[in-house]
Length: 234
Image (tube, rainbow, N blue to C red; front, side, top):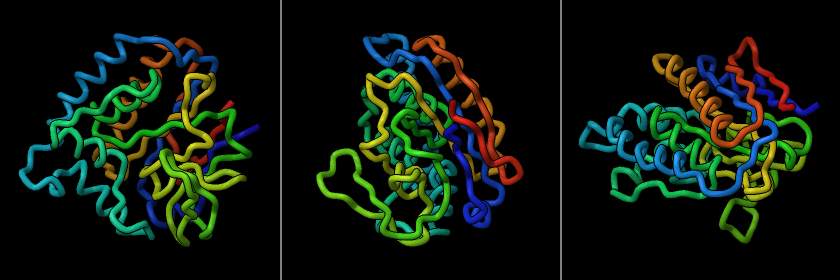
């Protein structure tokens, strides 16, 4: 049975972190979903609440992840997924639709100001680990033609074949991406700010409920911490 597991090496760097896991099974990630599209549109508007400070990097939703990314090895200039989404909002370039499930988790991410990502469970090889890279593990990003291996000490999600998401939540790979053929999906949301852990729980609940309501199937939720750091995916 496949699990998501968070290793001791990760908890050494981020002992107070929380990772919300939403496992969806039997979904239909196809077709037009006006409700999800409307939620994404509204979420782009709501996200301005996280951009109250004039200097972008001083906004708490951005600053807390800038600090987190200084604690491990990263590629130059990479940023957390929530910063990338909020930067689009700031520039008046709203996050647009991709497919129903991706649209849904982007809407939740914007609404709650927390990073969120997703993978197709059926494409994972073995367990999915949130850990530190040894360095050199295979990774091919969406939109790239050449592989870009991980750096030693980089926080990554990886399975038996290589990296699934680089620089923690910066960029997903092609191999495990969510597509319209996805029927079993793993969604993860992360918080490094103890003051936002309750928001993480509510965001995961909303993500779970909205996904089942719109895409069918079943959902299970788990909040992982350093004392409870593994969860079966199916």
